[in-house]
Image 1 (cartoon, rainbow, N blue to C red):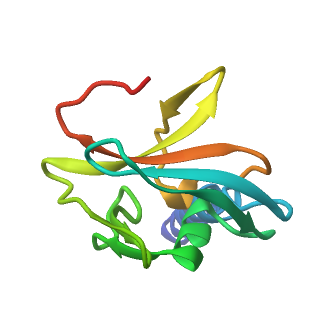
Image 2: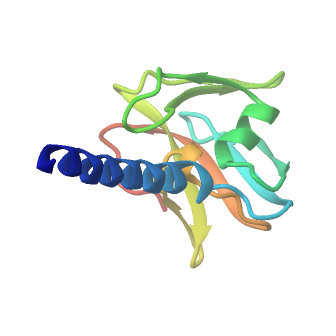
Length: 144
């Protein structure tokens, strides 16, 4: 009897953790309403290759908006989530290798862009926010 009770308790704990993780990684980071944000994309030479406003809808993540507006190249999903290594449209193509360089996601706050700690799937788009995608060398420090 103790064995069954222990299995039930462990099962409930595992299900609770799974529900929390699903909420944290999939629901929490979705837009709560429709809106637009401004996006700047810079290549390795820091040339602006794209600048414009992108529309998002309730339930979108930052990744969803990028995927709807650009052709994305991604690494296979890992514990980091989906890693975007390339982005393109009719006017530009950026492809990184995630070893020597990568696409940094930056958000404009307090008068400067700062690199986010989250991947594109974990960013909730915010109406009126400024975002920047920038090719960064692995050895580079923070942007300004």
